[in-house]
Image 1 (tube, rainbow, N blue to C red):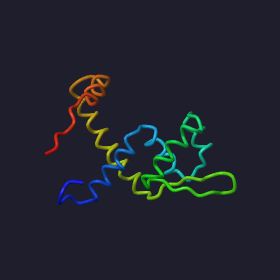
Image 2 (cartoon, one colour):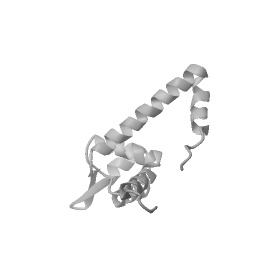
Image 3 (spheres, rainbow, N blue to C red):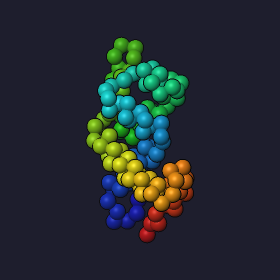
Image 4 (cartoon, rainbow, N blue to C red):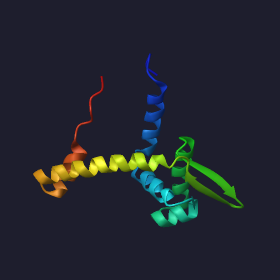
Length: 123
């Protein structure tokens, strides 16, 4: 951690790294609909159960999801529903950005342009 830096920035960066996966974002939105076991999540997402379990383990370690054993199954839920709100705000920002870009160019080029955009510089 940098000197005199608020430790919340480090925690925030760690959580954002965890969320930097389209599949994990998809899992968050599924769990926003209600708790799920890993088998149901894997089926809904069209991925293997081990793959879903790996994503959930990373998310649990970051404090994004919680788990509860119910007999032989483990039920997962969001640790804090505001994570969906935060993801929704960013989704809105990106949707508006793509809309602005598509006014200038065709939609396929707008997505490509957004993907090529340089990362913000840090001081």
